[in-house]
Length: 389
Image (cartoon, rainbow, N blue to C red; front, side, top):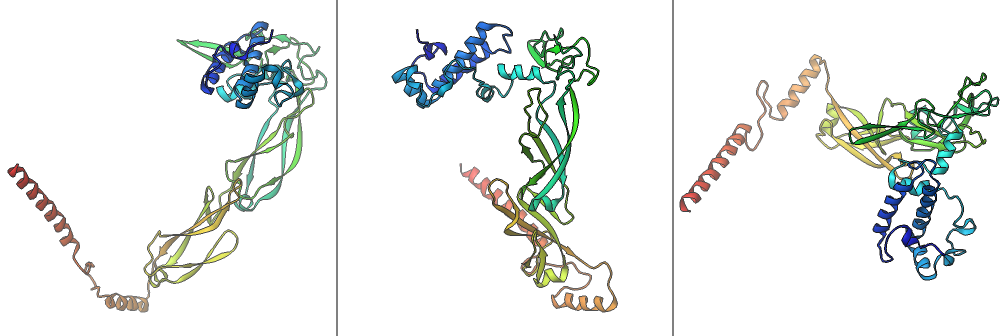
C-alpha cells in the first residue's frame, strides 16, 4: 500500500504552505535521531517525515503528487534514480528551520569518525593597499591528518569504546530548573567514543600535524573582517576527504586613508588663507590625485564627496565614495610683517582691534531679546483667548 504524505505529516490535503512547515518542524523534532538514540522506529519515521516534506514543501512536486501520486514523481524531476529508499542527508533542510541545533544522522556518523573538525580557519593580515587593489599571498598553516599507526582512532589496538560519560551521544545534557542545556561531551570531544590504551605515536589524539603552504588570490576590495574559503585545503579525514580552509582577513590601518565599508575618508590640511580665498588644491586619491575646489570661506571639518573614487565592493563590483574632510590650519607664530598685514586685512573688513565682532543686520544680544519678546507676545495672545472662552 502506498504511503500518503499528508497522513505522514498529519495534515489535510488543503493545508497551506505555512501549515506544512509547522507540521514538519514538529515531527522532525519529535523523531530526530539525536533525540532517539538507537531507536530504529523513530529513525524510519524521521526519514518518512523528511520524504513527505521534500514533496509537499515544493509547489511543483506537490502539484504532480496531488494529480498522479508518488509514481508521477519518478522520472519527472522528483528524486531521480536515487528513489525514495536512499539514505538522503537532509541536514540542510532541517538546519534551515532549527539553525543547526541538531546534526543529521549522517553528520552524527561522520563526527564519530574524525576526532577534529575538518574545516580550518586561519588569520591573514594584509596591508591597506592590498585589500583595496587585491594581491596574491602565500599562507602557511598547520593541518591535522589521521595518525597512520592507529588509523585515526587514537587507540593502540585500533579499538574504541562507548564513552561512559555521555553514553555515546557525544553530548551531555544538564537540567537547570525547567530548562535543559546540551553541551559537547568534554571527555570524548563529542565523538561518543573513548579508548582504553592510547596510541603511542599520537598520544591518543588520533591525528598528526603537518605544515602546508598555499597561494591565494585576495580579491580587489576585500574588507577587514571578511572571510575567504579555499575549497579542499582544510584538515584531512580518516576517509581521506578534506575540509575547507577559511581565511579571516585582517587589514592594517593606513596612514592617510580610513575606510568604512566601500567609502574612503581622508583629512586634507588647508591653510586658513586657502580656505578664505577658496583656492583649488590637489588631493591624493586611492589611485592617483584629483582637484578639490574650495568654496570661498570654507569651514573647518567641511566635507567634500567624490563619487566612484572609493573602494570596490567585492560582490557588486561598484566603487564607493572618497570623502575629503578639510582641517583648517592657522600659524602658531607671526613675524612683524605678517602681523601688520593681518591687521590691515582685519581693518579692511571693518573689524576693530579689541572689540568683539557684531553681525551686520542685528547684534546677537538683540536677537536673544527678540526670542524672549516673541515668547511674551505668544503668551499674551494665549491668555486673551482664554479670557474670551
